Structures are given as C-alpha cells and as structure tokens.
Image (tube, rainbow, N blue to C red):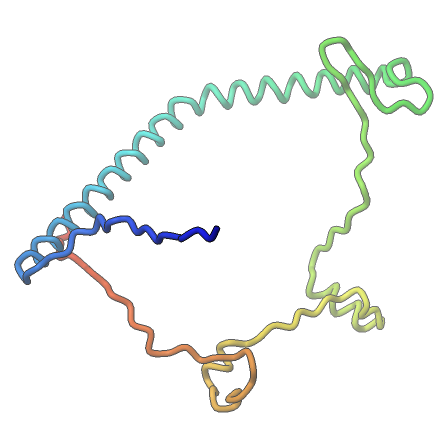
Length: 172
C-alpha cells in the first residue's frame, strides 16, 4: 500500500511590519537589540579579561613549577638511562608514570625560501619546487570577454544585498 507524504511547514516566527511606521519602529528595536548585544559582548570580554588577569600569576607560577619538574626528571633519567632502559628499550615504567625517548621522524626546515628556490632552479633541481596552478579571478573580472564561453566560469554581477543600518550616535 502506498503511503502519502505530507509536507509540513512550521509557522514563521518572523514579525513582519504592516505599515511604514511599524517598519520604522522595528528598525529602532533592531538598533536597540544590536546595541544591547554589543554591550553584553563588551561586558563578557571585560569579565574574561578580569578572570585572565586574576589567574595569570597563578598559571605562570604553576607553569614554571611544571617546567622545573620536567627538567629535573629529564636530568635524572638521562643520567640513569642505561639502568632504566637496558638493551634497545626506549621507555621505562616508574610506577607513577612512564618516561620515554622517541626519535622524531625526519623533517625539512627551510630558511630563506626565496634564495633556496633560486638555488634549486640554478642547480636544475626543479623537482623539489612545487608550483601551484590556480585561477586568477581578478584578471577574469578585468577582462570578462576573454573567457566568454569557457565552461565552468560565470561572472556573477548585479547581486543585491539588503542592508538595515539603524541610526546611532557615537559617544565621544
């Protein structure tokens, strides 16, 4: 048996003005709501700044303690590495935690990328230079006639945005 599908739409909760005066009143309410939003955001940022300032010294002290403990542990472990890690073992269990020595995978660090690229080109090592092809949209906008008929390129123009900007005075 075939089932009927019913389309249900929820009622719009958007208030729509019916007159010019109602529209003007809604713009005023919009401005009030935007200003309240910005005031609340400023209040939130002030509270975050106060909390950050209050905890900054505590966190700095605790961070320095953590760094000192890590350095002390590492110094002791380096001095006792042979007894902690016999043979080719790279870690040791110390009941309350584990220490381990790990070799990082190889990585490439480049300083002065422009001169390195120039040197690679001069030496004929272009396989180590990546070139990126991308569409120059600015050039297309400057000469849209040249790409007329190219599939996949469309010049979008005449799009209209609706903007509501309530009046407000800036406090000086």
